[in-house]
Length: 114
Image (cartoon, rainbow, N blue to C red; front, top):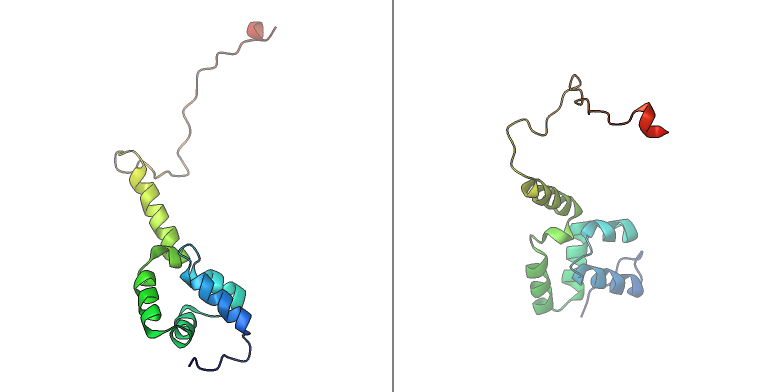
C-alpha cells in the first residue's frame, strides 16, 4: 500500500506529477516549477507511489536521459549545433572589438536612383 502523501499534495497533484515524470519531453525542472518538487523528491514520490517493477522501469528510462534535464538538454543542443557548423581555421568564431567589417563595394549611384 502506498505511503501517505505529503499534506501539500492532493491525489490529483500526485497523479499529474506521475504523468509528467513518465513523459519523455517533460524535464524535472518543469515539475519543480509547477509543484515545487526537486528531482530527488520526484524520485522518492515515484518510489512510494509505483509498484516496485514499475518504478524500476521508470528509473531505467529516466536515468541519464537528456530530455529530463533542461540544463543537460541545452548543453547537448549547443554541442550538436557547434558540431554542425562548417570546419574553419582556428579563431574562426572569435572576434575582437578592433575587428571591423570589410567595406562592400557600393553599386548604388545617383544615376541609378533616378
